[in-house]
Length: 125
Image (cartoon, rainbow, N blue to C red; front, side, top):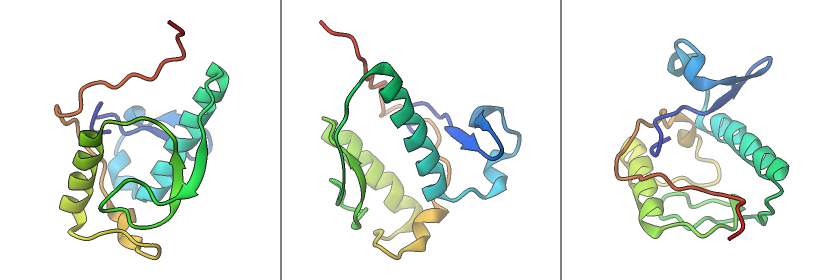
């Protein structure tokens, strides 16, 4: 969300573009639910594109998320991870552990120009 300002996909009775839903932020969708929706769409997109990504359940490279969760094995710029940690911590002033429901209170992020576009492609050079 920080890279685009886009709220992501939403699934109620059907999949919808979050940008097209009036009052989306007021509907109270928890952060973990929104993350699951995004992950499902992302994995489906990769599958249809024929891109294989390794997934595992473990602790992410984060100073704020201190619990086991689903992780994808991707090279990712360390500064982006630090900015996300900073954003999460600035919203809740705590770290997130296994039973920490406060993570669900994380709001929708707005565009942040520190996040230049980061493209994932299936193109072969």
